[in-house]
Image (cartoon, rainbow, N blue to C red; front, top):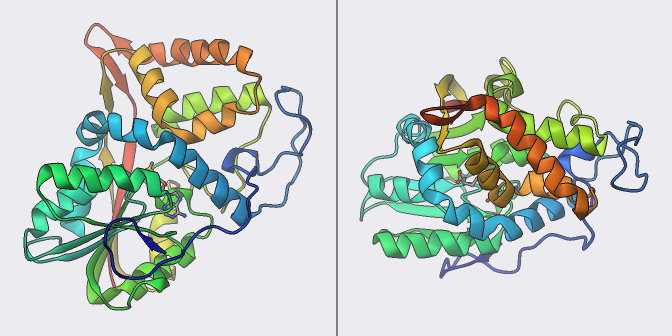
Length: 325
Ligand SMILES: C[S@@+](CC[C@H](N)C(=O)[O-])C[C@H]1O[C@@H](n2cnc3c(N)ncnc32)[C@H](O)[C@@H]1O
């Protein structure tokens, strides 16, 4: 765990193995040479350390773009974010832990609610993306402490020290979600609230699942196995609720929040995902670069079905969960 700003709660945390090649989309595929569309699907051992290293590297690379697309993100995720903060009971004076905080959009929203007597700690596995969160907080005149920390290592924080834990579009990418939920319980005081935003099913999130499917088809890869991380890993009926209940939370509720992605055109959506969705970029890394333009053109063509005279409206549905320790 390493404080990116002056966190004062420890030092020297990082991932172990230097090599990271296992990704959520190729967990069921053999290790034949990359780029081919004829790779045969076969079980492959999931290595969470490699996976984590790759995830961290993805977000180190995508950090600047995720920050740059911040206004689009906040408009797209705004309603779900406010609902998450409501369900986490974030108000004046709240001590809030933000897990997988990214460039800090929801951290700033929490800091505005908790005010000068509150405290917001934004944590993430990617130190680069946290620098944008720290800068954004400074620019907005709110106080957000940033700490580099794996969301599956929350027990490294002092126990019973937060009133609320929030996590927006982060838990889905964790290989050991039960451990992360248990860590949230560790950090919360008794009666404290946890809340998170995740994608629902691939069918209801075509703005993302269409590009994923097209790239997967081009690369010849199968979907992640059940229980493995990925954008829709918590979206199935009852999955999110049962994960929180199994982690010992009570009063668990899950709400569906429509969150259509509004942009000027399908081309803009491709630019948004191409630049800032680290997972898609990394998937394409196994395709020879000269084939990338054709793949992105195919994605743009497919997303064109969501374009009209009013612009682009990408289908997206989020789930917002709230629970009590
Ligand atoms: C889709 S972004 C969401 C960022 C931010 N919460 C938001 O909604 O704008 C996913 C974030 O999860 C972080 N992340 C992925 N795996 C993580 C882990 N094991 N521990 C902590 N953060 C992680 C990434 O670094 C990235 O910042």
